[in-house]
Image 1 (cartoon, rainbow, N blue to C red):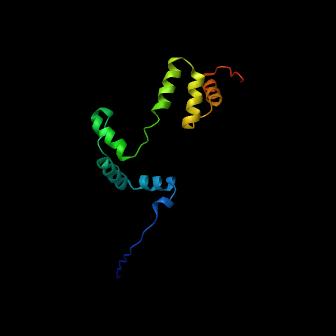
Image 2: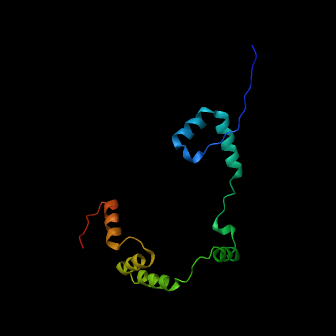
Image 3: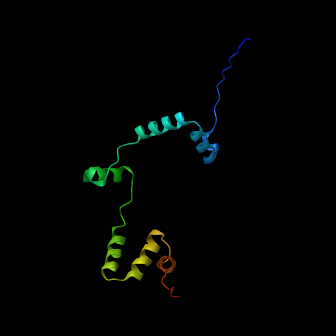
Length: 121
């Protein structure tokens, strides 16, 4: 009996596959799963902490990423409110300046988490 081998190029979009399908295929093919794990593990950069960088490195990164550091006045006011124990003013400032949840909402969530009775404002 003659044997014929057929080869073809193909491609597919992995992003179009759902996670369960990819997971099932990896689990079904143990050598592929082991290879992928080792390959990705080797390609991860070494973990670093803040102390691994100098002040100059950090400032250079801030400059390179064009991070806005002009809100020092807001931080100063926030720090003052906290020092004065004016939590309401501090929360209101963070809500206005940084788009955080309104203070009443944040307090309601904290009350739910802590089990404290919620005081209506």
